[in-house]
Length: 151
Image (cartoon, rainbow, N blue to C red; front, side):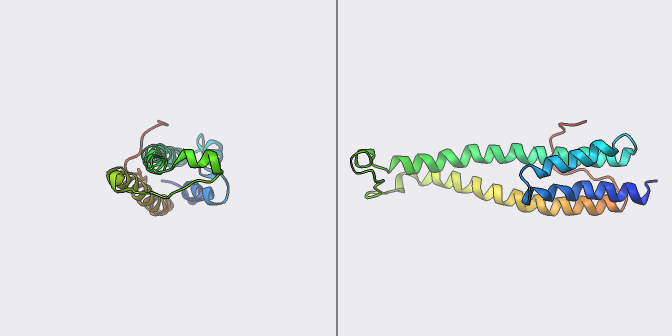
């Protein structure tokens, strides 16, 4: 049976991932600090700390995959339609004949990757809240689609 303090620490470990909106890499730094300071004292806190960090690392991996799909798709479309001869002569980027009709397929792939990223970030927000509620109730929660980096 977990004590109230252990449940609160576990819930706060999950909620500390929201610090990413205030501090860069706060979603890794603060959960690591909380988890490493209490992991030896409580198996419940250890489990929840690992889950929070594994989920944040998985989100990072998925974000990089979405970026590796979307960025080249949009860069290809833009660079395909820019006249570099005019850029060298006038120091201006000219989009005179910007026709993305031939690139609609690759633009669709990029747009789907951006949509997937947006959906993932919304799901992350609600899953972190759900996990913190479960932790505050004393239940162990495993995030879906999480890669187990820490075991």
